[in-house]
Length: 257
Ligand code: NAD
Image (cartoon, rainbow, N blue to C red):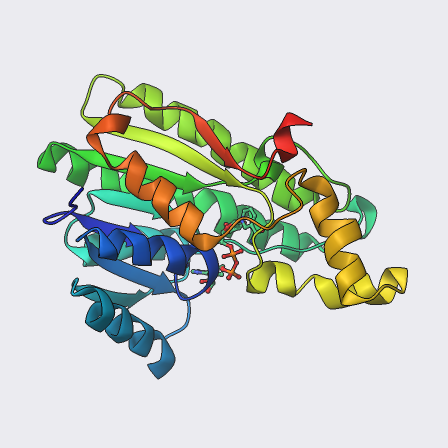
């Protein structure tokens, strides 16, 4: 399928899942807007590399997804937004009674509220274009819970709820809204949790991967960013025109347990 003529805005896309999803959309021919809160030469180089490797137009726009005005400005600066992928996310692990309030606020803002603000800015553009796709990267933690991830679990459940409301408000229009719920994917966000877990449980890296992370995934394998990207491209295809308001789990069976 071809996404030529469509513009995709992918929040938090200078690494991990966002970068992988952006790449799949660029390979399908979309004009792609990459984003993060930083504005380094490296960020623009990532966009230039993706453009040269895929032949798509790829640009990088700096915007902090913890700030409502910057969420809306990102979509407006993109000039068009046929496909919106809300992917920016951070994580913090601590018990509720030791969870820093500023971490709670940041996780709720970046992982959940940003999706509300970008969607609010994108829907009028999608309506004008007569077509639109909202793809929210939620999580298996949007459907299940783990201790010590209160803000993350709350934010991801919120993203699943927001996805359903977006789908209902656009149900009679050629716009769909769905959430992808990944299990564990070995990205910088997950890598960052490994050293602390090794220390806490006196485990090797291999033991943490096998006995802590992949123990949640019956497949015993990490999901990949390419699988997230392929699913996003599918959600943009005509085959997915009637798929709206749902969650697609890519978690090796985690949520079937
Ligand atoms: P990652 O750390 O590689 O990517 C996170 C992205 O968000 C980065 O591009 C980062 O620059 C960006 N970001 C962080 N703060 C931002 C801000 N204030 N403004 C704009 N961008 C910001 O991690 P990832 O694993 O690729 O995570 C991507 C999404 O996938 C997140 O929403 C995460 O919750 C979700 N997810 C990841 C996994 C997993 O196992 N990796 C599982 C389920 C869901």
